[in-house]
Image (cartoon, rainbow, N blue to C red; front, side, top):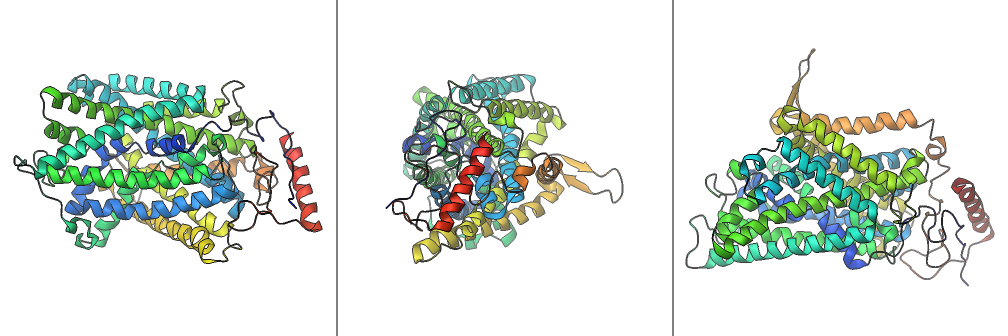
Length: 558
């Protein structure tokens, strides 16, 4: 016997409360969105130089070790999505596990991180348009008005694409990511062939197993800084889960896509890091990865040497520049997607203004959430571009590390606590308990280290001195990270009375059915641990509780 509860109709016959287009994405599209969101080429170009400056030849070991907490948390995402496939992800899961305040701050962490990174992505896209056409005068000036204009145009274009529909977004991502992966593979293979060839460059170093030994790193503090920095280049794969309500087999596909995305990123980063380091070395002069002049643009500098400047090589070098451009543009688009869906979910569950829950009747996308995300990001880009020559944008990228560690770590803890009574058996204990919990511990440890490091002015491009005693000098990386978190706390408490139904647990709690369409009748709280088919027939008490939940849900939707 199977016990089911038919979901009430709301908004349309095709959705269970939010109105997103269902069944639009398969596993391949979800993986593409997950990988593209991290902007592999852009992340490597902007981060690898700083990693090498910290740990030298041990960069490959840092790439691998930073993957561990990411993999652990992605498993937590997978397990939570099986039971609660809601586009609010961390917001919804943390609310159900810990309560409204934790959930609200988890949602805010996603929103703040995504808005802060948008300025950097738009700036890079703007710069690389000019570099692609050989205009280094403008392209090398990140704060140029022309770069700002092109960056804003890119931002507007990507916002419009997200507005038009998830399928259009996914198809554009497939094209951009395919180009990105192909060129990165060609770059890595060409570099390694030249390293082992008879005309290897003077900087070349053949790969060694010692590069993968983290114990060769000079001290624990340097090791921790390297790990924290590497978290940024893995960040973004959770976009594959944020589009879960638009995915076929939403309980399975998004979780699988998240784990697959992280593994693909690991393989890509290890291969490209190994190839670039082998070809260019870690010296502080010339094309060396340790040269501070190359730190912000490793791929184009090394790419010119790998491919050459004539014939087909010149074409490939230009493609590598185009690659970083499309990578940043693609990530701009896939950054808008999860933020718009997080705010959509928060609005549907009555924790922020209802305007964010509006869905386009034709495109079935979150219209207000998407437009607000693009508009606020553009305004912040304008403000940061004109302050201290745009240095705040680089500090914003550094500050994001705090927010990433916070909401990823919170999700790991939420998984372990949500399933705390269902950990019987080795598989459940590992996948739903220990592994996500350890991921949370690692990331919260990284959060503490990030706060300590970002407090030091030397780790920021722009600093601020207290105009009153004790006259501390603080870096803007710390101010932006802690400041955005405190802003979230202030907004939460300021709006707590207005959104009382949410904060008192009436619109979203452990027993609230997920507001998504189901292919079959909605199943609420009846599945066995680690079971996808068999259901427990509810007793009379459980049946009455579920009836009350449905009644509350009906009132809520109205």
